[in-house]
Image: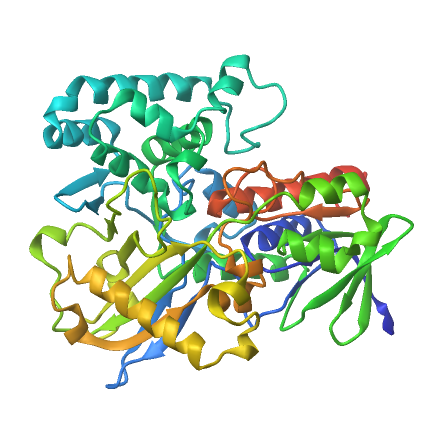
Length: 506
């Protein structure tokens, strides 16, 4: 083992996703000697982008996965965090709350907008026989919003929920929809904003649905000008400007545990770096079962942990289109389109029965040069085991069968997109596709999962059974998503300051 006496830090952060970046930036701002290790060649995790060049030399800047985020107004939580870190001027947000999502059902198209009253009127116009049911349902949803705790800064399912909310958490949203509506096509329209989670309606409880929809309707949504990579880079810059360090291309193999306490990390090259505490922004399975090791964990924790399941992954197709491509006139105000399944009670269970189409250049033309456009098509996929689903468990094992399925899935999604963008294929200059294996390769998230644990599970506490080991990111409190993971990093940093350092600076 190679252990350098000079490599000692107040805190080590594992993983350069937004949660890890937020944590390290807050620690550095408070004067802590902190280092962040990221296994990839750049930080950001899913909040990143990549470039591809068209045959004529023009560049396409593809957003990896982020669509819209909340908390970015003048007094929004993310804006306040960036302001506190001295990074507010490094990121520009664009208000997109006035945009419309087109929902394509088998027999009609429905507009989804983030104005609740307007959306109610749209539903009533589309389904006039459900007029009173629509009003009653949204009246009920509004009453629930008043009862819900502030889920922005703490877990939705903290101890001490009222008995009414506890009872609500036992109801599936499918059963609630069935109690209000006769026409099941409405189910699809109300499900669309959270279709990314990949769960069947029977698996999503009313309380979590209500919390998600409160953010949709009551919080403005924003796009990060230039792509989510700019947000990740702003946080990384805040770390270095405040004396912290970010090392990319450095994978942590092991968390050093001594006498039940986290005391540093061991990298893949065998070097050991010591610290007073460790924060993991990595996949929770990787953190506990591999980096910490089962032998260092209480049996009760392990038994509970192994019952939790990760969220679904995604299959994504990234298309760079020529300057001749024309968006149909009725879709030019819609940067997102949801192509919904025929069976409303099944969600995207069939694999590619749901597809989300995003035209990023309608929001941000700077992402493509020469008047070209960028369109991505994605569908959630259940992946419990990569070997079973894709015939390989590692990116190095890719074979002919893997590429065959990848190409067939991409082709199917493009065909689905041509329902709303006729002739799309004729304008493709550049195409890339990302499978769950791709997501696993770049993030190390098991099976390429997207938002930590699925919505059926409570997030892990940020304090772990190992003393001085903390969590940040989508696997821990308060919740997943961009806003949730940035908050988790801030909260982990505050815990470390409170528990390890008695002065304002480390």
